[in-house]
Image (cartoon, rainbow, N blue to C red; front, top):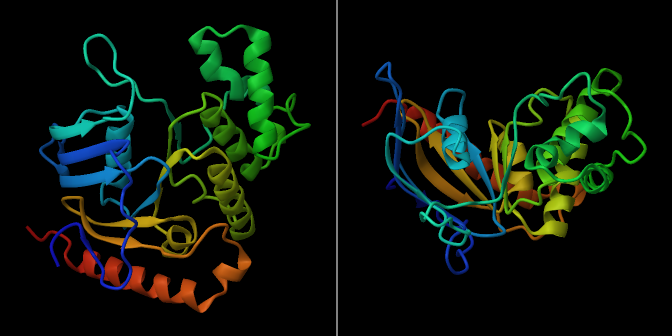
Length: 275
């Protein structure tokens, strides 16, 4: 099957209208000569929940950081046709980024951590604290506004990190394996909460994970990546409707899609290093 092809029987949804972000021929070669990502073509429509799935070292995080503008591609283009542009024609997408670790300021409360992006924008204190309190409530942390990171559990610290990403009201939320270090129960709960917030707000999500089960539970579409150089080998759609819950997680449909994705991932790993 050609790179970027769709597995038979599980088609991804057709993107409605112009994509929010479009990647064409995106590559990243580091100064060491390592080609981390090669030839990625990917359209991400508004409102999509897309997972980038692959083994460690396949370029998932590199690709996510290029979409975020944290690092520049060596070649290819990343366009934002549906986002505002400045006077010079540069895209100004509204995006939030959630890292693998919460990266909270230990000397600041949950409220101050969540409000940090708005403080950096120069928003008045009362306004930014009101909005940050709303974001914390949305992620289930109402009542913990004055609590410091040292007094929060790992899952609660990650919730603060998500609130900090949401407080700017982004069009797209980029998440780099945010739940990988959490226990399974907390991870399931945060998966459910993330889907609920996504359905309420309608923003786009690009979610990096190495878990087949997590990717199938969360996503409308899964881009399966192979490593060295990192590239998209397959796209698999998840046709199950939302909202999703334990009934879906324990269903035959879920198991069948997990098998399909596992096979695609196995093929991608087998193609490692293929030119």
